[in-house]
Length: 452
Ligand SMILES: [Zn+2]
Image (tube, rainbow, N blue to C red; front, side, top):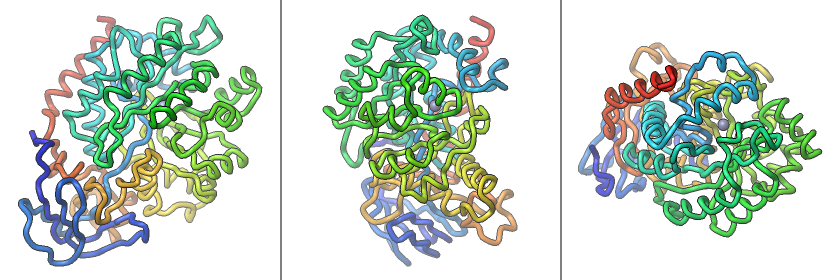
């Protein structure tokens, strides 16, 4: 297992193509990249030295991909019968009682499995949205588990407070008292949030959705986040049911709801936003409010095609998210980038989104949404989160343009550096024993399915 305190000098040698995603969007060929102390130190031809040399001949190099929306615990409930063919609200009603049986160990194991899956798809930085805490589970469980995997992690302390008896969607047993929620938000920020540029853990605050918390909690959380200097995250405008709930309960559309409660700004990002209208897109662009676009989940739940093209054209910060694995049900950032591109082509024609733009959204776009401009691009002085793709294999064999990565693959990364540490080496995780983890995780899911 690599020691994360020791960040070796690594020289990535002779990369065929580097999609830098830097400010000039340069695409470099036949170059070397020097990584030192977790930072990209030098980019150029014929660099020499370095403790460790990573040969990248015939490989494509990109920034590590960034996941802006996930519920890691949900990978214990992939493809649950009864939830496979339901819309959002019906799907949630099937799953809530199962999730009510999770505990701390489920959170730990699902976090590790989910981050391992993401790492192999080229993802170096992931957020997570944990909004239920049954049977003693805490955000701490996921943070400790993530540190062992070695991805940069931005967990958010989620919450649900309005249960069925008060007109909300979740069962009352999965909700918490709002004063307890706010106390625990303060606790986890004080204990775990690291604002440094090199930070491997930044904590955000994330009441679950308009249909599971009160307006007061949304407002109080926004005040708290600004006091603590942390980011805000929630679900917004996911599908027609969601819009109808907001109109009937609050008498307004999601844009106004967000604006009234302090949920716009560069320190806020909303998941989905499938149903934003033109005015709301302008509001998000003007206020620098971010969006986590989750195309596979939106397809799976039949929520619709998010106005990604319009959002990008208006200047909205957009990143990609795999969303929870109960609604995807896989968690590959590479797949999300491809799906984002394909969906916009379905909606607007084949010239609506290029493979390059899809990768830009998956890297630089996501990093900006998560408030990490020091990540998501390959440039001197940026954090060394780097994905190396072997384009000499089956999926990309015959490709005339291997740098158009999301057209021909590969779907899995060959090497992945996070903060200059090799988390994936030659297609294998260096940090966790994956076969053992899968065995443990599978056993947990089977026990949940049989009611043990
Ligand atoms: Zn979600």
